Length: 220
Picture 1: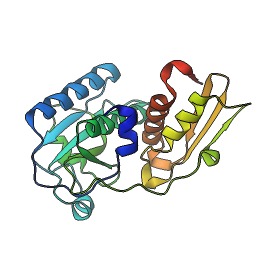
Picture 2 (picture 1 turned 120 degrees about the horizontal axis):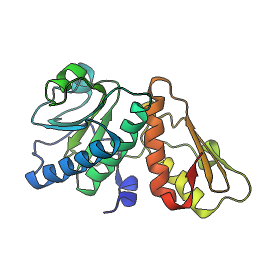
Picture 3 (picture 1 turned 135 degrees about the vertical axis):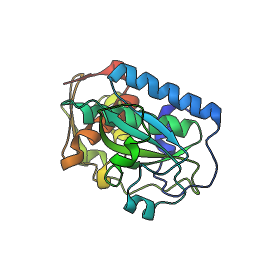
Picture 4 (picture 1 turned 30 degrees about the vertical axis):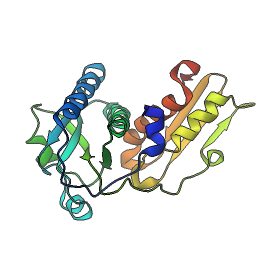
């Protein structure tokens, strides 16, 4: 399964079966995490065998979560956007490995997650539950391309593909608060979702890039 195929297959899963992630997949996940940390100066971390990173409400809504990826890094102006971008990569990569995920953006326990990390002073803004779901999840109601996008002139296929991929992105409260505009090979993307705007913007940029192809446009 490719990343692009994973975008269509991935859905939020809150309940998991009691099956550990095999060591070979743990190695692959950690390698992907290490690459993101090096490239974007982050401190993402995979935690297995406990649910410390989940808050009380998440534990109530979910079931069987025993593994998660901590979204963390040194504090900076663009930290949330980088966490959103790399978090989107991780959940789609996990899907290609046959794993399910749940992006826990507002119900995580920073204190619980921190005690399972080797990193010191970092800012944590969410965790990604990961494992084998009881189900594969279901699609959520989505906005239309016309509701979130516009293009000056006739939209090229890459722009259309990028918008369609963007509509598959997970967002806070499923708001899909994106506005994307195209002009030539320039693309303007904004996201108005309050506290989660930075995270959602990063998620949106990742999805749009996968759908459109990085070589076909430039972020404005």
